[in-house]
Length: 181
Image 1: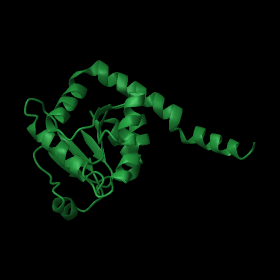
Image 2: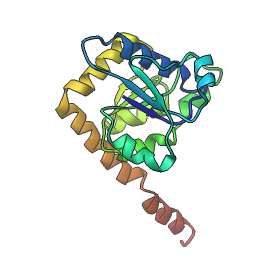
Image 3: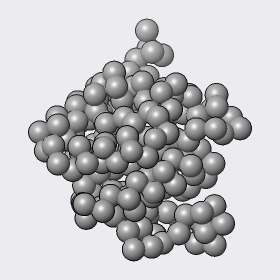
Image 4: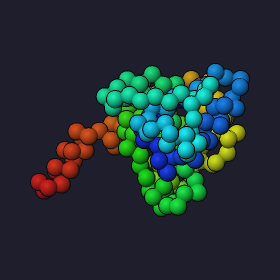
């Protein structure tokens, strides 16, 4: 399982949930790899530590597409019980476009009220665990790893969603046309 990007308040609790799920999945060889530029002392202060099943790394942004394309699961978290639920509910993480085109199945762990969870369900491009429940999260991980047909369908839907809604060249042209009418 792979997470890439900075870690700050919108993801912390959801990331802790996936760490716990990975540590509890004893029947599968599951590991979480976090590529994050945050300093290790900051990560440790928020309770995210490297361990037997959790690896912390740093890599330049230009390497992220290659790193993402090798993951078994791409993890996209948003947390519950934050001081700014309206921001969480309307957030669209910047890495979503990168994940959509990476060619790997995606696991979204976010509240049901979020735009991200609704958008993913509407377009069926990710397995969404929209409750803060470790058992449900473990079931989702297991499904993505063991049900190859399901994971492949999500990847195909992610690709279609990317080209329909996130292709920068297409969107730039649509934007330009707004001003030429």
